[in-house]
Length: 223
Ligand SMILES: *Cc1c(COP(=O)(O)O)cnc(C)c1O
Image (cartoon, rainbow, N blue to C red):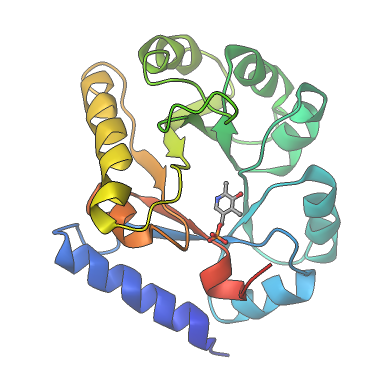
């Protein structure tokens, strides 16, 4: 089965890799399926998509049950409440939105022994708005050091959701700043994941080093 939106988006990602001198297939598509049904997911799955991102635990678990027979890699990308860390540690392969040592410790302690380590990204608030989730750029190096030593989790990199901007150049700037900060940390801690970019800024994200783009609207239509 083919899916026109999926194919167009994958073509756009491949084109952007070329345009911004990124290695072929260095950018992975994460399909963000929040508010969409298990059937919507099954259709993209039939067209070849395997990685799906969800923001809400209960909603995700329901879809995971319905899609139990599918070989899907589930990513948690939403805000994390402490009382949900056990569910997240048990039912996901990736968590992009870790924003405190406390949450990282709980995920590490609660990751079941029968599963491989949980892949995590630290969410960094690069727009500097107090109301937004994510740690500051200044907090990043120390938190990396404290998290990388925890068992049962694999610190893979960073995630960012910059303020929406119209201009391409303005969209690039926060990604660039964060990429450069990670490059410094990379000398002592191996990080390979930049979860950058959504439907509105994926080109800018790919230009500045994204390895995972998290796309909802451009794949499924408006929510
Ligand atoms: C909803 C969401 C997305 C997808 O956003 P679109 O603009 O629909 O592509 C990506 N990342 C996070 C964290 C989200 O909550």
